Image (cartoon, rainbow, N blue to C red; front, side, top):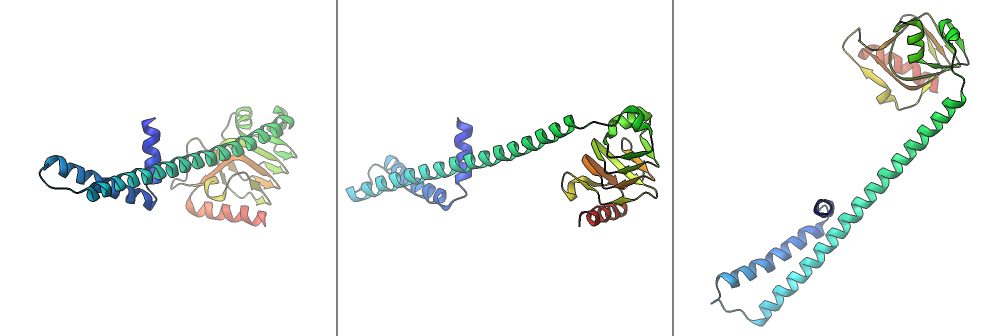
Length: 218
């Protein structure tokens, strides 16, 4: 409860109301402390009334601050919940699509030409017992991760797309060799879609790879 109140104050403190409330409450409390510490100092009723008014106003503004903070936290959580719901819905759609799709068989994954297939990179690596896929052609395929892959050699990428945004799908490294990454060498990708797949390579190679993908999206 105290954490929630503190978060509300911090959220509402972004408004000028919080500053005004703090000044009013401090002024009222300071006058009261002076009176307690120095009882002989005369004080008339107008001063007492002014302090009461300042205190009430300060408390009222503080209440407004808490209200603004609470509303801000509630709004943020609503946005977060909506974003999570949208991501969950997208994942559900992908799962339904994947469950309806017929993934490539063991025999098909051993072949070097793939057309109109749903391919799991992890399964292909397992079937071939190698993290290097060399010389394969993928046409009109849906290629699934989660995987981090490195594309090299003389292969081509034409009119392909991926789920995710351009900046998070591509990972730059200073190393020519990357342990754990799946290597696609001399492979052709035509009219394919990559799902939950990241691409890792040096800065120059990533720049070229981005161009190949963005050209295919036009």
